[in-house]
Amino acid sequence: MIHVQGLSKSFGKVKAVQNVSFFASDGQITGLLGPNGAGKSTTLRMLYTLLKPESGTAQVDGFDVRQSPLEVQSRIGVLADARGLYPRLTSRENIRYYGRLHGLRGEALEEQINSLMLLLDMQSIADRKTEGFSTGEKLKVAIARTLVHNPKNVLLDEPTNGLDVMSTRAMRQFILRLRDEGKCVLFTSHIMQEVAALCDQIIIISRGEVSANGTPDDLRKQTGHENLEDAFVAAIGSEEGLM
Image 1 (tube, rainbow, N blue to C red):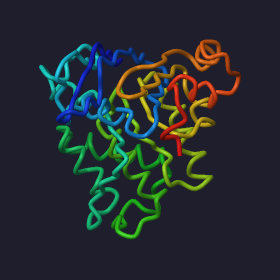
Image 2: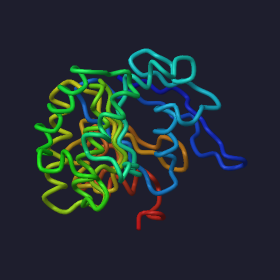
Image 3: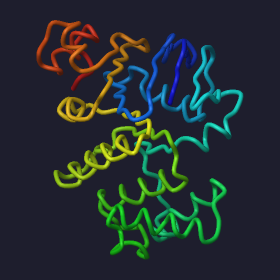
Image 4: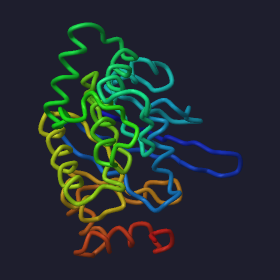
């Protein structure tokens, strides 16, 4: 579970995140939404300890991101927008490298790699160098790398960005599977159809602040709009930044 309370971060005079608070539960998919520049990615980066909050607290399974960063890192898997694969390594080698970074070794690591490859149908690309992979193939490697240490909390930053229809469909099904396994899933997306289909809870951030929070039905009722996209626009107070 992820608990954020009064989280803030500035870059010079720009207040990227201001007093953001929310709770993301295990066994649920929580969507973190907002227009470009709203503070979503900055919030995620503080959660996975890449950035330090200026004020407020963020806890992952009870461990504070500032006080216990290594404990937090062991409990989260992060699929960032930049996939960051090593092109000269094979799929297996990329996954193994990240497993070792998390302290996994030997037979236990190899069994976990093989399990993920079966789960993600990666047998045909297991021992190929990732250079030249399609977007969907790269995504499979990145997902396996994200989950190699079996984290309880999974952070996904626009996971279907750039995927074709079939890969997008597979990714959405995989996100649902993570939820059904009891994991806490926090993800960002600009696709309202995706949000409506996946999210148990939605947090909308606008200008660095939480402007709405609740289930999709809650947001529709709060804004008076039946369409979730219209509810989103009403919650952020402007159509600026949507395109």
